[in-house]
Figure 1 (cartoon, one colour):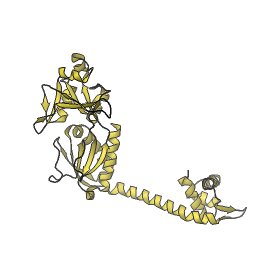
Figure 2: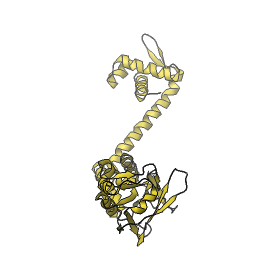
Figure 3: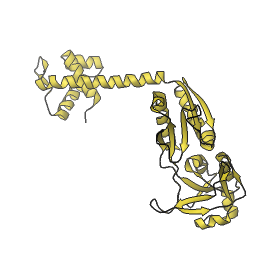
Length: 299
């Protein structure tokens, strides 16, 4: 595999007409410079220089390759400069909507870290479980769970394999027992999410990725239109929750919640970053996309 340092030594040697002169400029030993050129010749299977005891000159193949080597180094430097400039120039205000639980407990902290890296970026945040209307509300970016039905929007996947999981606190499990099967949900207090006055009391599960959904009707004494409250109730031991694993990852790691029936697949609930049109996909937005994707992978 070609090495960038070997290309640099080759171009500098061609420019100076001397391995020792190139080595001095690059602050390496002549032996290292000579080894770099030999390594490059071995990779290319050609002679780049014709050597005598007193002179060093490019071969015909070396002259041809020099043009390409120069261009390769130029493009790499240009790319590096663009990245450095991007770090200096990323900025502006982003209006972002996001779901309550993920937003409050994870994304806000991630945005703090992003802003520390790029202090010229400002945020205006909308945190709610109601899906924002990007055509009517002043939103640049929406962070959303689930399949994106509007094909006119631009969706960047952040956590495409994320699924819902059943969880309960250790205290709840100790008091009420573990689940042995999905049918056991009927005898448990299920903590239900409510949106637009509709209670989501039908939970879908899959025994393998290609299976038909098994839908379980659940009941409980609590429902709420804020998904963060569902998680808090579960941690407090009030019942079983069925939520995005991403929302619950910190509680699961800390032992505040335990996954029930881990061999049963929950509903897929991919996380996306949504923009309304291409003009909104700025370098700042792309950098934020990559940053959030990396955070999701760590969660």
